Length: 248
Ligand SMILES: NC(=O)c1ccc[n+]([C@@H]2O[C@H](COP(=O)([O-])OP(=O)(O)OC[C@H]3O[C@@H](n4cnc5c(N)ncnc54)[C@H](OP(=O)(O)O)[C@@H]3O)[C@@H](O)[C@H]2O)c1
Image: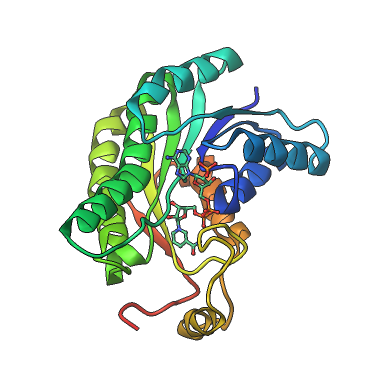
């Protein structure tokens, strides 16, 4: 029987590469993101690359509680329990001058990075198969801070506590819960396709392997975390950053 893997943030970057990794293994994949057109294009790309891929999508803003019933329905329509829930949706928040801009930055960062993961997970908790895997997506920013007033890094750090709580709650069902904390990953929309070349060079220099990460580096770890070999790996935050040093 094929496994059902639900991936939020699958319309681009790391989530899209992760969808390819699971589809190539013969898993059924449900891709979630806000942009219908980008999801449809990602699905077409995946079907062209992986013959016979069982891939579907649903366009939802996972930071909104009203999206949860539609997510539950999309899963129910597959007729399968969820074997892997990968909460990859995330991104930075706009910054500005003044305390109102600070509030908006923190609200947006929390909604985009924390609530997208919490609402997807809590919404699907009863549809998870026993022995399933939940993977949250943190960042090196959780360890060393981030731009603006730091809302992005703080939001990612909140997921660390949540993953431990999830592991405790879901452990009796043999469900694992882990977080992946990437360093700089190129070939994504994360920097709106426009990272400053000097900044990129500095980030690459921080890595001890002398290159940027690519989405496949992160997809491989998510695939492992959803495999039977990782059944005893839970409540962990695993960094994928080419040895990128904290605080540099
Ligand atoms: N790239 C890096 O260097 C890096 C480093 C550390 C951590 N990360 C983390 O890795 C994850 C993936 O990032 P990426 O680099 O692949 O960035 P990306 O290419 O910008 O992809 C982000 C994905 O999240 C989706 N998304 C954002 N808000 C959403 C919402 N409210 N509801 C549903 N989907 C939403 C986007 O789709 P729509 O726009 O269609 O909604 C998109 O598919 C994120 O959690 C990010 O914080 C990235």
